[in-house]
Structure formats: structure tokens, C-alpha cells
Length: 329
Image 1 (cartoon, rainbow, N blue to C red):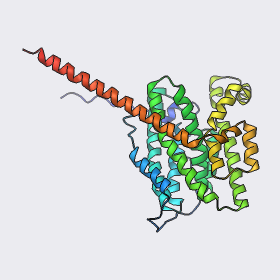
Image 2 (image 1 turned 90 degrees about the vertical axis):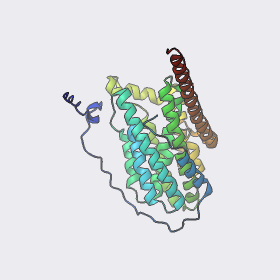
Image 3 (image 1 turned 180 degrees about the vertical axis):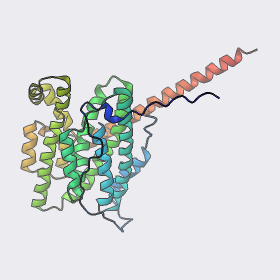
Image 4 (image 1 turned 60 degrees about the vertical axis):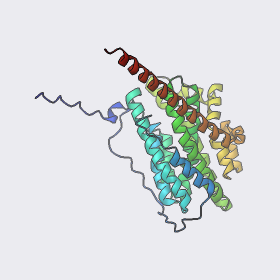
């Protein structure tokens, strides 16, 4: 019998980080109650429709912005236990599965196609920690579903539309189809709840939004990249702050967040001043429903083209087999 070939040594993700990362876990203390609901029949139809679409649109990452996706996975699981109503629990459960697929997909893409990782951005980690540490059930919603997911959705859209690589286009189209539902979920759930807030409670959430949006703006200044490339970091940050191209890019990045914040009722003077300072307040008039419908259409077009290509390949295989069979004596 032949000898068993030696196994390849396991490669650790830690070896591929651009900056050394300490092994172990990042432990964020989470506060808040786990809420059970005994009402199983009363639900908001639009949330239940999103839940149904979440079930219908499942796809397998083994056949098809890594740290943010793991954060979304953790927050989605937190939402399942903390929200008080059953329809939100149903939808958050499907989102938890979505986010697990996204972590799997992006980790595989970075490992096999890119070959390196950056540590979690400090601005993103701060916002994730603040959302998870708060005992109020709506803060993880607001931090993840509106701010982090909204910004990610807009960024993915820019990259999807610019990408020349078909794999990247497909990957982003499928993920965006999920993310659009997630943002719609947060929008619907929080809009109802925030109508009942006192002025003080609303001001507190608006303070969270302002701080979170500045953190998300800073996240896309690329400081880690400039450091790795050996550029003058201060000059690069100055460029990203004032360049017309980057200002236009920033407006696109906030095209999902600003109208959602306005729609859920967190549109006080402090929020509007912050968006004016960032140069993104005009995005308040963006049609979120139209953007979401477009995300669905693009993903469905990817599915259709993929199906047609597979069918054509199968057609060619069959005809080749028939032709080869006809040549046999």
C-alpha cells in the first residue's frame, strides 16, 4: 500500500493580518434583558413579508468587509433575544443566518483571492461596542440596521457598479440583496417605536446617530491603508476630507443612512447640522424603496445570467457527448 501523503500545515488567519493581532476573542460586555413574547398571531405584515423573503432568498456561500459582517452576525443574534415582538424575532432569525453566510463568504474570498486581512477598524469597533453594551433593545437595531448596514449597503453598491470582475459583481449583488432587507427591517421596526418616544429619549438616540455617523465617516478615510503603503497619513487624510471625488463618494456612502434616519423620526436640528457638516444632508430625499427594488432586480439578473450560462454549458456537454458517441464503431 502507498504511503499517506503528509498533511499540509494549517494556515492561521492571524498570519495574514497586515498588522499583528493578538490571538483570542474580543469580549464586549452585553447588557439588557432577553424578552419573550406570548403573542404569536399579531404581527406587522410588512415585517412578516420581509421574513418570508428572507426565507425565500437563502443561498449557499459554498456555491457563490469581514469584521463588520461578524459584528452584524452577533448583533442579529442579540436582536432575536432582545426585541419584544414576535414578528421582529422571526425576521432577525433569518438575518442571523444571512450574516453567517456573509462571514463565510467574505472570509473565503479574502483567504483565496486576496490573501491578507486588516484588523477591525477602530471606529467600527467603537460603534459595535456602544451598540452592544447598551441595555436598551433598540440601540443594537439603530447602530447595526441603520448605521453600519446602511453604510455597508451603499459602499457595496458603489463597488458592485464599478467592478470589472464578474465574481466580485456576483458576490456583492447577492450580499446586497440580503442587506437591503436588513436595512428595511430596522427602518420598519424603529419607525413604529420612535413615534412613542419622549423628547428626551429621542434626543438621546439622535446623539447616538450623530456620533455613529462621524465614526462611520472616519472609517472610510483609509488610514490603515495609507500607513501600510508608507504614505504621509496626515496628507492623505486631508485629501480624503476635502477632495471633490471623495466628497461625492461620501455622499453616495450616506445615501442609505440619511433618508432612513429621517424616516424613522430622528431628524432634529443636531442631526441635520451634522449631515450638513459632512456634506450629505441632500441625501435625505433619496427614495429608499426604489434603491431596494433596484438591488433586488440586479441580484435577480445575476441569477438569470448564471442560470443561462449553466444551461448553455450543459447543452454543449450533451451535444459533445452525442457527437463523440456517434464516432464510435
